Structure formats: C-alpha cells, structure tokens
Image 1 (tube, helix red, strand yellow):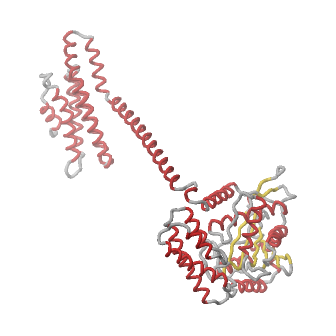
Image 2 (image 1 turned 60 degrees about the vertical axis):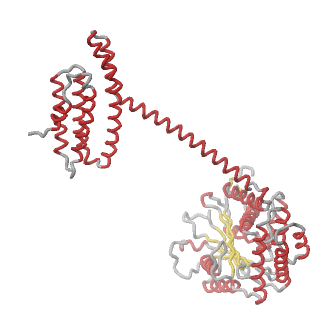
Image 3 (image 1 turned 90 degrees about the vertical axis):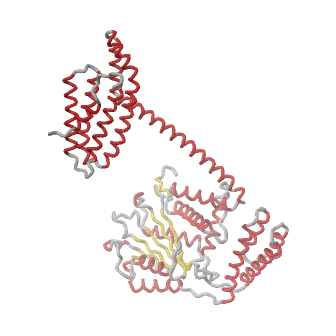
Length: 547
C-alpha cells in the first residue's frame, strides 16, 4: 500500500419487491416509493425531522442514461415525478397467470415438509445424504435415480417414505417443466445501492462526478445486462459543509435486458462465485438459491468486489486505500465458518453433540472451581471477622494483663489472681455472648435508626456505668468510683425511660434486658466472692424511678 492512509467505506444494497409492503430485509413498493422520493428530493409530505440542508441543494447531482450528469436543482420537479412513476410501474410488473402452477407449488411445499420430517428420524449417514439429495432437487431431476439411491438403505416404513418422496419429485418436475411466472410477488424488481466514505476519515480530493462514475461503471461493467434508472449524489447532508461524506445512490432494474427475466440476484451469485474462484479458491461458493446465511455472505462478497474496484479505479492515484473494518471482516469470517459447518454431517461439526457435552462438562468444572474459590474467599472473611471480634475483647485483654500484674504481687494477691484466672475463661465467654447479642440488637435498631440514636447513647452510658462498676468492683473495690459508675448507669437508664415514646415501651424493656444481662456477669462470681453486692439490689438501684 506504499504508506497510504487506510479508510473504511460503506457500501450497501437493498432489494425492493413488487409487494405493497414487506417486513423483512427487503423492501416492498411502499419502501421503494419513500426511498425514491427522498433521493429525488420530492417528499410526499414535510419530513418529521431534518434530512438535508436546503441551502446546500445546489451540491446535489443526478445522472440519467439520456442526459448524463446535471444538477438536481436543474431537473424540474415534474420530470422527477414522471421518473418516479416510471419506476413504480416496473415495481408492479405483471406475472404469468397459471392457477395450476400455484396449486402445484403449494402441494410441493407440503410434500417437501413431509419428506424433511421423515429424514430427521434417520441416523445412518448414507440415508441422510440420500434424503438431502431429494430435498435439494433443482431443475428437472432424475426421479428414479434419486429414489434408487434411497432404496438401498434399510429404513423404517420404507415403502411409505419412498412413495412420498416420489410424489414430491414428480410434483417438482411438473413445476420445472411448466411455464414460469415472469416475476414472483416476493422477487426483487429494483435494487438500490450506495457508497460513502465516513466523514471522520476526511477523504478529500475525490470529486462528486467521479463518485457517480465509480458506482455507475461498477454496475455497467459487472452487471451490464441490467439497466440503470438513475443515480443521484447527495451533497446536502454534511453538517460540516464538506464533501467528505457526499455519496451517490444508484437504482437498477433487476430485469435482464436480454432474457426479460428478473434475475439480478442469480447473476450476482454467479459473478460472486467467479470472483471467489479466481481470488479466493479456498472459499466455498454460494448456492444457486442462497438461504439467509448465504445471502449475508453474498452481500459481503459484493462488498469485497466493490472495495477492490474502488482501490483500482477511484483511489489508485490518491493517498488513500479502502479496507474493511476489522469487526466487519471478523463477522464475515464467522459467517464463513458457520456456513462451512452447516454443510458437514452433524457428527463432523465442531459443535456436535460430543463437543457440546464436552463444553458443558468444562463449564461445570469451571463453575466448581469458581465455587471453591468463593468458599476459600468466604473462609478468609470469616477469619478476618474472628480476628475483629477478638480485637474488640479489650476487657478480657485487660483482665489478662491484670492477672499478670497480680502474679507479681503478694501471696494473698497471688491467690486472688489464681481464683480470678480460673474464672477468666467464663468471663471471656460471657463477654463473647454479650457481644453477639449486642450485635443482634444493633441490627434491629438499624431499622429505626432515627428513633434509636438517642437510645443508643443513653444505653451505652448505662452499660459503661455498669461494666465500669463491675470492673472497679473486681479490681480495687474503690467505693467512690463504684458509686459514680452506678449513678451514671442509673441516670442513663432514666433518660432511656423518659425518651421512650413507643407504645409498648420497647426501648425501656430492652434497656432492662441489657441491665439483666450485664448484671448476670456479676451473679456468676457471687459464689467466688461472697461479699459482692446482691444483684437484685443493684438492679433495683439502677431501674428505680427518680423521685
């Protein structure tokens, strides 16, 4: 490419049938009329949204077989309407009336479905191929040879299936030998095509008339038997007022000027297959009657042909080189792969039952591995949570530290420390139990966070008062500090009760429960320390109503 700037290009085609309205990839007569009116700038009504800039209309061109290229503004509206009517008449091309043919086509369709259903029940590859050869019959076929190929295999209800296959093939041959309609209702009568360079690529120096000549010469050279109705170049659709994205639309008749038949699609299949044979011999050819997948491939190969033509004719002496976008080319490779797989026996396809089962197994193993990783991750978080709980047990750590200091004291203090050590494990467990219950209460309180904020403050003061009182009781037994802690707890409880506006005094009851739980710790050590105060006395002191 000698350092040329790569540019992508848009090239699209659309077929219009002689049906009034069609909901598919092809358009009907209504869609054709709408496109013609848009292209010729003669809308039937005011467009609902901005489609072009009127002040740039002088940039629009039209090519006609009789006059060549002129400005669209110089082509009177009356003549544009006449051109539209002429093309519309072709879109309503007559068909050969043959009621018997219609009945035969309907019967063939029913028989073909019956044969297809019968073939689905076969498992032997040879019989499957024989059935497919019958179903894929094209033109007048040798009925006896096709039936003989199927007769050699052992199949269930052979006589019945052979009889149905015979009826299908005889009906098919009757249709092929009889007169054919000039055009079918779902057959294309007009093909529209256009190409443009994306504005962002800023392809400049390529004149408007040169762009018209490119698409005109392509169709006249590759499909010379199909007349061009007209070509228009739109130069009034670029919001940046540049010619980067100016683009031509071409409208071609699909009727062969030599045979009179509407067979542009068949000719395009032949031309594409010739192109593939010459430039891509390893690529499978398109079938005579392309299905949906092959139709997509057909259009992609037409794109390839137009890209090659553009590079050789339009861009040869410019700094640009047209190349398909990587995503577009990747999509084409995927279509080719799928199409190739579809032509193989099921057992040889990359995604046969065995391969699908293998994929499912691999997916299950991956899911199991992922689940195990999730389990390990969950275990990790559990360990972290346990460490956090331990870190919060500061009171237990303080007790252990006090135990260490006590061991360094007098014999009497040592004996007290020994007793305290024996009860330390129970004390830790009590704190853990209390912590778990406190967490549950906190979760419930979160639902009514606004109402509980004040309660949490008072409850915390009350619990701290009780716990600190117990701590002081166990350590130095200082009476004045004990009383202050107890008074703090009592005042906090009173504030809880005074601010409890719930109907059933829920906060007060919870506070009473919390007092009981905290004092429960004191009760456990009553036996070890007989001179400790009575639990009920302390409870009454904390919860008594202030006079």
